[in-house]
Image (cartoon, each protein chain N blue to C red):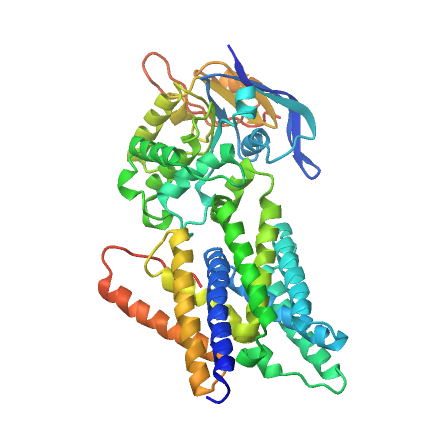
Length: 251
Length: 279
């Protein structure tokens, strides 16, 4: 299977404090990885390194040419980064996802605008295409940002805590959307909520300064202990059931 | 209305061209600063540039050149500090604001045997606007139109979500510095029209009129230019016939237009709720 990117003993830090140490990760096409781990364990830092926002202090990342040349990476940040009072419409926000492929002097063609209509249609945003962010609900705003992330047909989609601000009725719909998207792209999703995501993902990455890849959607408390990932645990078998347990330590 | 018809024709043409170029530059720059909520920062840049005017007089160079240097340097300085987040930005702007004015006054009074038209620089004066000023504003209009046309999407998206822009471009900071420098230059060149104290309103009132009726960035620019032209040309004409300072007349006219637009919007408002309180 073709890999999309491969991290080899990557370490990253803010100033003198090392946040990620010796991380190895290989992401293959159509994988759906749930990135879990305690707060401050380096989950968002991992995304920043993959996005190129933070340079690793050591190690290297090799990207598949489809990500390098065609720039096919989509990113859904936590919602707080955009100014919701800024005079820009839903349509234009969705279109901004194409800038990664267009460069500084990028213009939007008729084809691009049609593409935006299709994405908005798919995400149920057609009725609010002329609205500003401050005029729509949190769930709708998230779909707008998801539209921005997927309009460029990414092969790799990075999601940062998408469950944080979604109302529960929309949540089911959102994960169903991701499942469909996963047929055409690999997804790397940071989340606190292991319980909800374990039904939707294919594998886990436990991040707590180091990274352990777990190539199955089922994960046990023993696994987590071995990975040094002190978080709430939810497992499920043939009949879905939940086991919650707190772990201490893990250093 | 004394003077030859040639003189009058020249005067009216100058006024008309000045109004066109002022509204184009102010519309483009104003939409940027209003939507990025940089109005206070722009006030700081404006008043800091007065220091350059004073030093220009003292050193015997073109005061607008001095103002341009001061304006651009202070703009870059504040942007740099806000990127680094080393100090409180609003305090820094407040200090810069007063420091620029103080420097300007000191150097103007230190200039031996020559008392320039202070009022003209503070409040704008139709008589101090030279052909060179009009040409400079014309060139600035062309530069800004080209710049905003070529980089329209990038400027729009950096202002909306800087963090996301950084994920696809490593030129975000450079572009922000260039844009802010162009804004500073626009402000300085418009000082001749409206004066140090009033120029900021020339930039901020037109986009706020436009924001009452539209939410698309491009349309805000377009309507700002139109509203700006209506305000400046009417202000120019009234100032000319009534013999009152042009800067104050332009701003007064613009505020009247804004109030009228606000009333029209209240009456005709459909379900369109626009958040216009951005200043």
